[in-house]
Length: 304
Image 1 (tube, rainbow, N blue to C red):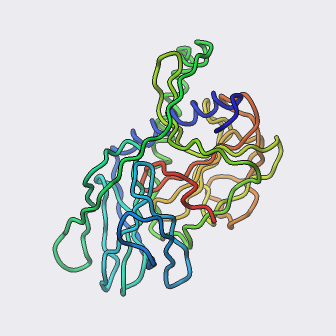
Image 2 (spheres, rainbow, N blue to C red):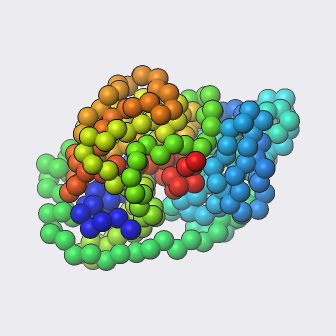
């Protein structure tokens, strides 16, 4: 559980990010390629490895989790869509694999991945999403910490539109690996999916991981990628987004300083920023999120 001094930060990131990802679900791009998991069947929590040695995330077919689905062989990578959005496909002609982020808003039950092979008709692949009950917390805070002023609301709406475009990034090349580095040293919260009710008003679930660290601590890229956005935002403060390929994105919030700029290519473990307390937060820490096919998923599933 995260400390009380970070409650406002958790609320801010959760509400802002989920609102952005839900709004962005109206847009539509297309495809990807590469891997082979050792555990691609069932609802287990296995970690697979592809022929090139890139580890898959831990599989957990629940809201906020990840499904790793074998698609079978084919001369070229099929195109896959989940919730009418492009899904990440990786592997080789021997066995293509879909790695699918499951939105926190998903209801338990049957889900479908739509797959269009390089040759042949489109097909639908069904899988089960299991229920998962995340914790709920009821809190009383100062009204100004919950309700935005007209000026702040107008700024947030402008930023939401911009970030809605950022989260739709979908570069064609798949990630070199799905196993990510922790972006900063420090105790990690287990609050992903935690739903908070402030003064009786329900807010979106916490959509990332908070890592406690002092101001100025180095923040590194969780994996190789391209900087797709770097700026200052009302809720998230100084923020960096990285595109790791085919719809796998990571986001780093509340930074003190930013050492990269949009368009820059970074290596795994390269310093990109320092920990801060910018945005709507009451103390220094890093809020770190992982987005897969525009769904905020549990970062813990990707950590080495």
